[in-house]
Length: 206
Image (cartoon, rainbow, N blue to C red; front, side):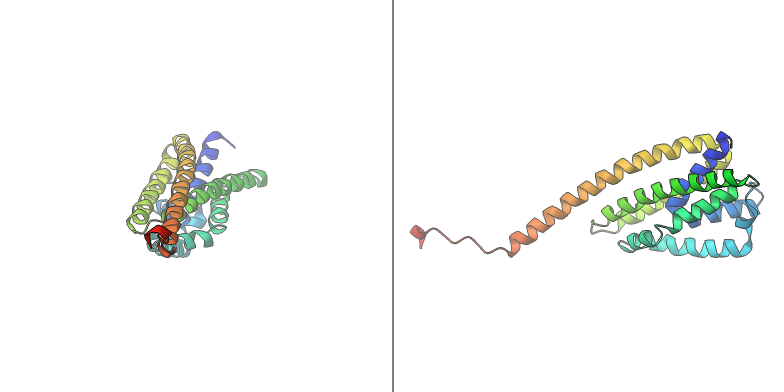
């Protein structure tokens, strides 16, 4: 398995961990338009219809606070497994060993990017306004579009970018999570202060 194919698998896995259905639509649709050489299974009409329908559903669910986190929980296993299937398909006519490596590479990257996304979203949901969710979701969709385009035009560059994104996303997820914990702790302290009874005045002032 050459470096270009490994880069393609890793990049597709990262993108699938963020938005599996968008990756399926982009790869299958680009294959149908003969822009790229895509696996025949992803170019099937029924697969594209199902993937497009689920992408549209996720497009809206991913921008609603708390619903996005519930969606992420449901997709904790779906995204890595879907990414592994796409990885196996992208290996083409490779032998069983290389197909297994392809599936593990894509599935592993999808697991990592999914965990970063889910952690970041859970932390963002502590903010009372919905605009952070909408902006973050649109930004993620844009990243997936860019990575999918690069993984077919320049897979090694795509790999370098997803590694940077994965490291940066992990650092950001921990930072946002820590800030969210501090914010929630302050909110609890304020609620407890409001519920507390006032301190009685000294005896000399009674």
